[in-house]
Structure formats: structure tokens, C-alpha cells
Image 1 (cartoon, rainbow, N blue to C red):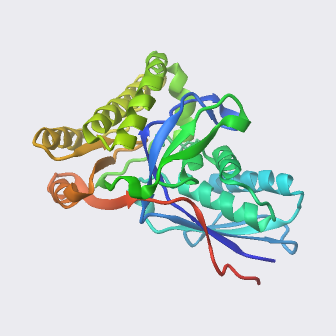
Image 2: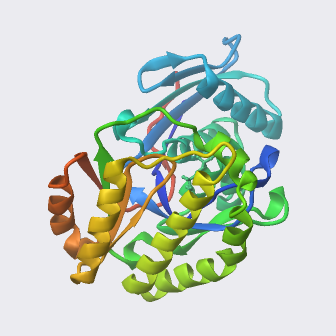
Length: 328
Ligand code: DP6
């Protein structure tokens, strides 16, 4: 019984995935573009063992049996079916970033699980197959398989909905300064949020703009054009939150300090600091900036009332296997 260990980074979307055309296969309503977050990671170890009578999941040092366990076990079922094996598995997964920090861990969790479990099951999948498989566990996880700046092609079917790298990590020295706000309140998760997307009268308008926004974002990344990137990233984040706020029932992820940070960042940019904001399904603000401005941005964020912590991430690489998982 071989234990296989894999690492994957979370990612922050520049153009967001919001809504599914076909939820069972997580075929998204639109394509999306993201940057992997280097320095932050999930490590997942998997060992299939004929002595087990069920799967076991230990998440951040705690045995899990609830919703997270169900999702992981269903993902292992997919991999067992592909590999033609029956053994249950022990899965040990932990993040090096704080859980309460509101950074979506499902992307790095399912990307690392997909890589470790597929190898442990004896499969030898290429990057595209890994990305497609990770997508079935969590949509955004497909973007944590390839390296650097990544585009998820929405596709028409399970076969052609996968992510690929549009530029390597070293292409552009960007930094994500994540402003963590003090009051973390429980809200609706992204899986539920995707289901609400089409109840918003604004989702159709958002989707109509997506091809142009993807094109602008891709071009901004390839040409390292920060102004172009900033405009499209902020617009896309605002559009997603407009959809979220006008869904039925409506959801508001922002807190008062979220808006304060957004306004400050726009002000800094008008002073010549290359920084822009983007917000996922929570109150925290991801401030993307050029690396040379990151110290200044971090310092300014720390001074904003309501910001309790600032985490920093550079551009991250692809998901990878760790050597020496060993046998036991
Ligand atoms: C707002 O990938 O977490 O972060 O497929 O249900 O696991 P599931 O959803 P998930 O959704 C991510 C939503 C987002 C935007 C994005 O990352 O593109």
C-alpha cells in the first residue's frame, strides 16, 4: 500500500466562475481566468488500503464525517471507477493557510486530492485529464492543476471543460495581498451560490459580456498590462456580486469594511499604485498588485479599520507530487 502525497495551490479568479450550465458535471455557465496563489497550499496524502471498510478523511488534523467527507468520498468513487479498484482510502489533508481566513480551500483541496488519489490508484493521467477530473470535485479546482495564470475553457461537455496555463508563474511578478476582515459571518457557500445565479435578472447580461472580458483579461496577462487587467478584474468582480445581490434569495457577502477597502484601492490606483481589488464568495478583499508595490499596499491595508490581517501570495506553480510518500 503506497501513500502518495500531492501539493496544490489555491487560486484567485480574475474572471469569475459563477453558475453552472450542468451542475452534476460542473460544466460552468462561463469560462474563467485565475492566478495560482504561491506560498499557500493544501497537502493531501492518499493511501488505498484493502484493510479498510470505509473511506477515512482527516482534514486539518480532525477526522471528518460530514459534508466534506461525502464530497471527498464521492470523488474517490470516481477515481476507483476509472482505475477499476475497490479499496477504500485514508485521506489526510491540510492547508498551510488559516481556515478562518476565508480563502476558498476547495480548489487546492480537490486539485491535490485528484493528483494524489489518481496516482495512488495506479492511473497515469495527463494535465488535461487531471484538470477535468478535479473539476468534478470542485469547479475552481480544475484551475489549480496547471501552473501560473490559468484559463478554464467552459467547453460543451465533460471532455472539453478543463483548464490550461496561459502564462507561466515567472511571466509576471504579481502579488495577491488578501485583506482579512475581522468579522467573519457564516454565509452561503459557493456550491449553493452557483445554483442561485440564474435566478438573477442580471446573470444573462453578465454572461453576454464574458467573451469580451475573457479576451481583455487574457490580453492584459499576456502583455503584462496592469491598467487593462485592473479595469476588467474589478468590473468582473462587481458584475458577479451584482448577480449575487439580485439572486432570489439575495445574498450580500460584503461587510462595510469590504467597501472601504474597495474605495481605498481605487484611490491608490489613481495615485499611481498598480493595485486592484477582487472579491470571492465572502467579505475578504484580494488586492492584486505588482510585486514592487506589495510592501506599500500591505502597509496601507493594515491601517484600514476592520482589516484584521493581511496574507500575501505570489504567483504559484502547478499541482505536483511530493517525493517520498513511502509505503506502509
Ligand atoms: C466565487 O469552485 O468553490 O470563488 O464547484 O461548487 O466547488 P464548487 O464552487 P467553487 O466556486 C468558486 C466561486 C468563486 C469564483 C471563482 O473562483 O471563479
